[in-house]
Image (cartoon, rainbow, N blue to C red; front, top):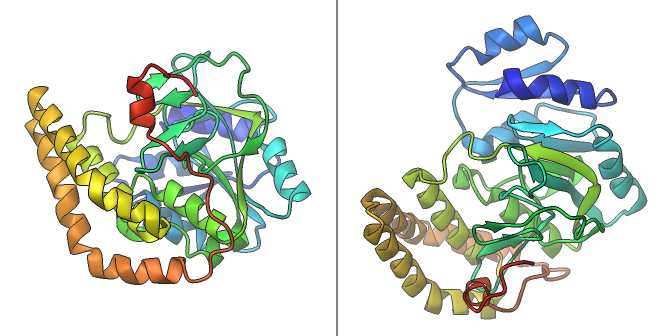
Length: 316
């Protein structure tokens, strides 16, 4: 991934300091970086801390910056991609996070699943995007080329004010990976700031380079972290609705995996609930701290994206 994508980042971003955080890799990445890209700063971590804590530890070592752009190692930025993100921060004091339009590196006329043109969640916590509903991804025909507020931005390409990242405590370390950027974006909104998508900035994302969509571990992380995020951040009415409805929906999801002949994925759903219940005490304390001084609620879709999809509305 680094060999293929990092040169494009260097070429497209001459105005920025580029840093690679190595999360305890053992595949020769460090040696290649030191030899082939000596102009790129290298931050070495002693083991794999996952996406969330890995970024927390790496960014804590970078001082003197007003903003960070987190970029996955399987992303190719388009020419001139950085300036529109910086302009949003410079012209809007209440914008804390700004993200680009994310297109599929394999099919460049299509949005990419992980972020598309900005993300939202529904009342039950299911994420979707401008350009992606459940597993249906839209063609990019310029229909989402306006900058606007979104509930969350993808961690694949995520620009954040450095002071806000530090103030909010960074990503939830216990998440390890997946949905930590949604949790962080939610806390940005609760702090009174905004998350914006800026489609003048464009990147191409391969996606699934670390964990494939069929990975049971990925299934567990998504289910567990989604439940934890909702418990931490959601207003009381939404949290109670989730507590009533989600157990049944997740049971259906587990049964569906069994029908598909994926018993490990079915087991991953139950493992997610096991971990979530074990975390209950800590999550309660975190929720109290997060919601102690809410400035505004996040823009959440007050309906069910799954029901909407079943009824035939399959685009944003």
